[in-house]
Amino acid sequence: MSHRGITSTNFSIADLALAQTGRHQISLAQNEMPGLMAIRAEYAQSQPLAGARISVSLSITVQTAVLVETLVALGARVRLASCNIFSSQDEAAAALVVGSGTSESPAGISVFGWKGESSKEFWWCLDQILDWSNYPDADGNTHPGPTSIIDDGGDLIYLVHQGIEFEKSGVLHRQNSWIESEHEIVRELLAASQSKNPTRFATLVSQVIGASEETTTGIQRLEELSRKGELKFPVINVNDAVTKSKFDNKYGIRHSLVDGLNRATDVLIGGKVAFVAGYGDVGKGCAEALAGQGARVIIGEIDPICALQAAMDGYQVAQLEEVIEQLDFVITATGNIDIVRPEHFLKLKNLAILANVGHFDNEIDMHGLEALEGAQKVQIKPLVDQWTLPNGRSILVLSEGRVMNLGNATGHPSFVMSASFTNQAMAQIELAQNATNLEPRVHLIGKLADEKVARLHLPALGVSLTKLSERQAGYISVPVEGPYKPDQYRY
Ligand code: NAD
Ligand code: ADE
Image 1: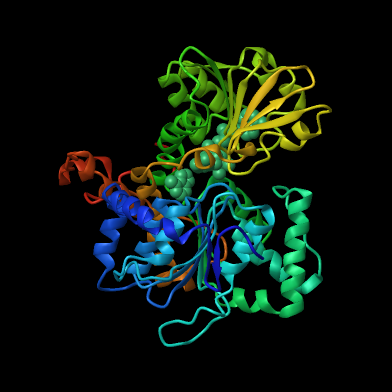
Image 2: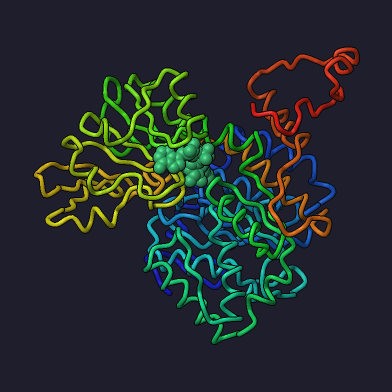
C-alpha cells in the first residue's frame, strides 16, 4: 500500500516536516490537560504499563498525542492509527513519529494515519497497528500483536473479532455500520492475512488482555458482541464514565461544532434556523452551541424522555419533515442511520448546510445524494462540497457526511479531552493490573475513579470544593472521601 506521504515499516504519515509545529501544539495542549499530566506524575516511578503493547485507534490529534505520550511515560509501547479517515492532524502524527528526545516522547512512536485516507488506506492502517512483528522491544523481542487496545467506534476491536471468525469459517459477517465497499475491503484484508498466516488473529487475540472503548457508538456495537457472548476479552467502557460522556460529548461538541461550521463556511449562525437530530449528550451540546450563537434551534428525537428534556430546555421539537423547508443548518447527532434522506435534500432551502457529528457517515444518506439524478458536486474547499440538486437548488455538505468537528476543525479542545483521556489512561492501568479478574464483557468505570478524574481537573478552573464533614457524610450515608452518588445517579 502506498499513499501521498512518508512510509517506513513502523510509520506511515503525511509529512515528517510537520513535526516541529506538532511538537509546539502538543506542548501547549499539555497545559490544558491537567488530568493526563497528573497521571504521568503519579505513575512515573511505578511504571504500571511496563511491558504493555497498546494498539490505539483514535483520531490522531494533538490531544491524542498527549495521551499516547502519557501511556509511553507509564511504560507502554504504542502503535497508533486513526479511527476516522478525515480526523487526523498531520502535525500531531509527525511529532509523535519524530519524538522530542524525552523519555515519554522517544523518537519512533509508530503512527499510521493522515488526513484524507481512502477507506482502503484506513483499514490498511488498522491492520498495521495490529502487527507488532517488525517492532522489537528494547530487548529485541518481537510479538505478533498488542497486549491491549484503545478504540474509538469499535472498528479495531471488530476487526480482531472478525479476523478470528474469518480464520475459522472463511466468512465475513455483515456489519450494519459498514457499507458494501467497506465490507469487501475488510474481506480482502482478512483473506490476504489468512493466506499469509492462517492463525494470525487467533494467536494475536490470545495475547490481548483487554480493551478500552471511547465512544457511544463503539459501546453500542461492543455491547451487542457482549450480549451474544462473542467478546473475546474485557472491554472498559470509557464513554459512560460521567467525566467522559457528560463532558466530552456535551461540552466538547459545544466548542467544536461551531468551530467546524465557522472554519468550513463562515456563515453567520445568529438568527438562522438549525435542526439538531438527536438530543442525547452530543445533541444537547450542539443545541446549546447553536442557541448560544443566536440560532433558533429545533430538535428531532425518537425518545420521549429526550424530547421532553428538549422541550423543557426551551427548544421546539419537531419531525424533520415538518420543518425541513425552514432550515439553514441540519446537524445529525444520533449515532443512527438514515436521518437525512434524499426526500429531505430536495426540500431544503438553497445553500442549507448539512453536517454530521455522529461517529459514522451513515446519518446523512450520502449514497442517496450521489444517486439523485442530475445531482452535481463542486468542491468549495477540502471537505466543503456544494451539491447542486435536480430542483436547481444547492446544499452544502461538510466532511462528506463524516464527523465534521474533526474533519472541518480539530475536534474537542484539550481540557475536555483531558478528562476523556485520563479515563482512558486509568482504564489501561486497570487492565494491566486487573484484567485477569475481569470477565469478557463490557465494564463500567467505577465512581471513585470517575470522581478522581473530575478532581484532577478542578484546580485548573479555580474550583474550591466544599468539604463534607463526618457528621454530614453519616447523614447522607456516603464515605467522606466518596463516592458521593449511587450507581444509578444520572447527573
Ligand atoms: P446518545 O445515545 O446520548 O444520543 C443519541 C440520541 O439520538 C438519543 O437520545 C436517541 O434517542 C436519538 N436518536 C436515535 N435515533 C434517532 C432518530 N432517528 N431521530 C432522532 N433522534 C434519534 O449518544 P451521544 O453520546 O449523544 O452520541 C451520538 C453520536 O455522536 C454517537 O455516534 C457517538 O459515538 C458520537 N460522538 C461524536 C463525537 C464527536 O466528537 N463528533 C463525540 C462523542 C460522541
Ligand atoms: N474526538 C473529539 N475530539 C477529539 C480530539 N480533539 N482528539 C481525539 N478525539 C476526539
